[in-house]
Length: 160
Image (cartoon, rainbow, N blue to C red):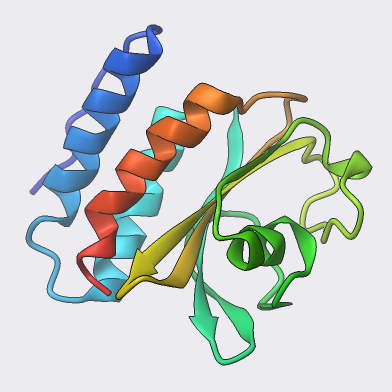
């Protein structure tokens, strides 16, 4: 299926409803987890004009290993409770960071990143992965984005 450009509304409820629909559309026929996450990261990255990185880290023992993403090369492994990703995993909740330089223990992948949003994904009641999003714009992600991306994340949880 060829990608068809969509125009996302500025209003957050409409934006997230359309984004969830697009992620569903482009993951629906995925044969496995990796292809679903690859397409999901591409769709999400295209929706957020100011995102410089969108991807997934998968739980692997006591750490997170890098999964499909869109953006510059990234840290291949993150420990439990470390950085924004590991902290979201440990807390079992989404975290929006307005300025990553102010987040104690932040793991820098791109020195141009200012804000970050990490959403844990669940399977069988346990965190199985995190969806990680970065932006060069300070305070780019907020509470509405946390809620909206949690709903978008539910679309790909079915592949775990």
